[in-house]
Amino acid sequence: MALETAFRHCRLAAVLRRSEKRAQKKACPVDALSGPVYDDRVGRKERVAVFGRSDVRSDEPLYSRAVQVGNLLARGGFVVVNGGYSGTMEAVSLGAREAGGLVEGVLCRQFAGRDPNPYLTRQIWADDLFDRTRELMDRAEAFIALEPRMGTLSEVTFLLALWRAGHRVPSPLVLMGDAWENLQSALESNGVLEEGARPFVKLTRSAGDAVEWLKDKLTEGNHGTERKASA
Image 1 (cartoon, rainbow, N blue to C red):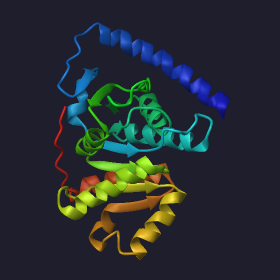
Image 2 (image 1 turned 120 degrees about the vertical axis):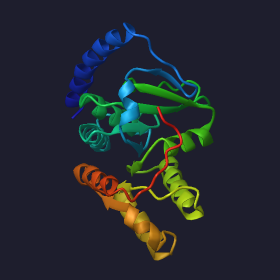
Image 3 (image 1 turned 90 degrees about the vertical axis):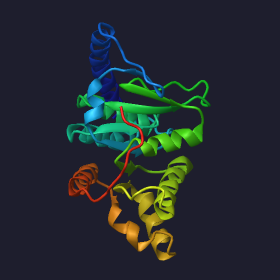
């Protein structure tokens, strides 16, 4: 597993070096929120935000699963949005770039000393954690939450709270992993996850199932998400 991951990193590094050389030959536009935009196609694709842990190592199964998620999202025509740092955020970014996809990383100026992962095609800077969370949600039409720690759990519960308060129209949300199965059961049995939200939430352990379900829900056109930020 570790050898396979190392080989994957080396192979993608060569691709990134070629991409960076091409990018240096043309002007890179900059907007108020982001750093260089290396590909202007981002404005014509739907975005999926992926929430996940920063403490997952590259030799762990959760990392490989996140790589697969990013890969399938990119192959499905989506722009991947994530927190831009290490762990599953890095893995999702790696998977998307392997498939030739675009990755927007929403970074935080309060995280001094933390380097963005090297697979981002766009860096979007937020002043603090609250702005970062809002930007992650505002940029996406759909969401995938991988195995959580407290940060991922807070992002999902905040998204559900926005639905409940009427501040955001419900969007497709996939919960991936064993932990979510127990959490969803507890939320439903205690009436925390309302009946009206259930059609927009899917529990699965399969990356392929997750991406196909998102495609179907977005094609239906009943999610109604209004994205505040556009490229």
